[in-house]
Length: 154
Image (tube, rainbow, N blue to C red; front, side, top):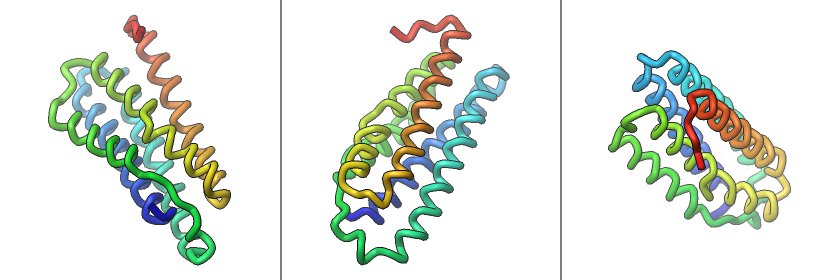
């Protein structure tokens, strides 16, 4: 897949993750700490989505020079499917929500596609690093929150 359609898929993924975290925040509104953590994650995903959108606008102006930037978007599509599946089966508790969020953040779609972009297309390497840093921040935040709740993730 060419870089621009792939970036649009990445944007869709970040948007769906933002929506998932907002949904979790609403699902667990009776647990203020959980609602707050998931609301913050949602806001951060929206910020990442905005970064991708800005990059898409810039790259659209240079589309002729990007034709050689290719990647396999299979993992992104799989993550989008996983989000839909999660939303069709609401988490029973905060622990389940944390585990599914961690799975998504650690998934191939949240790591492999970034590596593919970094290796194959220099014009998006800064974006790739920003997205990767966002996922790492989310993983650490979720792990810390689970620890605060006494949830063992082993």
